[in-house]
Image 1 (cartoon, rainbow, N blue to C red):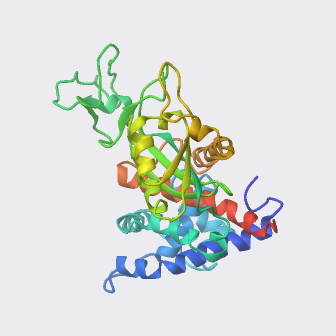
Image 2 (image 1 turned 90 degrees about the vertical axis):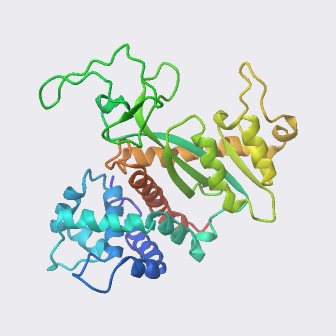
Length: 347
């Protein structure tokens, strides 16, 4: 069921557009700094962002298909801000203008603008948060993962030649992808296949499950904990003590110590399999710990929506800056989908 044909369609059609428009107006100064007053007229950045949101909402696979859809879909034209008779941009022009938004870090600023609206602030918790990370498959083939010193066996003849790498020891220290050098070979767990991947990290507030921070990094065993510290840092400056929930991967001595130095109470799941957990009964005895353990799993809803609807199961772009931009925009789109219903709920 699409967001326009659901039972609360009128609320979403008006509410979602109003929230997005208010957030984009707050970024007018940022947009003005990205564009030169000279030269040919460019695509307005507000329309670019609205079009990219539609791409996430409707699971459109490519920007070329998105431009084609805007050409004949009146609802898409209305949301983007194009009149019936206005000419739709060329796909190549759209892509080049989108890269300009990447230089201005617009995705992160757009997420902040959405959350800073007065009526949205009332929905957010300032004391209780959850964090998690997810693997995102890179747009690169395992065949492109070659030795950095160029000593690898050349592929077979043809456009997509055979390459037998079975039995070959391949690590991120000695190999790199020729297609996407920022991608890293990583596996989710024991018995799982290793894939060229990135990691997406999100910080969720626990009251309504909205994403308040997002970042993508290279895949590594320490990336989740380092990203969690960076995401919680702006919220740790509050005078009151805050809590941060997480899964067993965050139960390490160093990470727990770093959180406590920032006056953040670590509500992470205990990992006591053949080891000693970094937290004990002084933390787990409180009722709030059990609440955090239950609510922290809601962050998987955002990851699930991003991968199944917003098209993040496999990245469409290459390079960490573009992956980070797309992931952050997808988390913002997830918030925008949920906000009209939350704002309409009298409770």
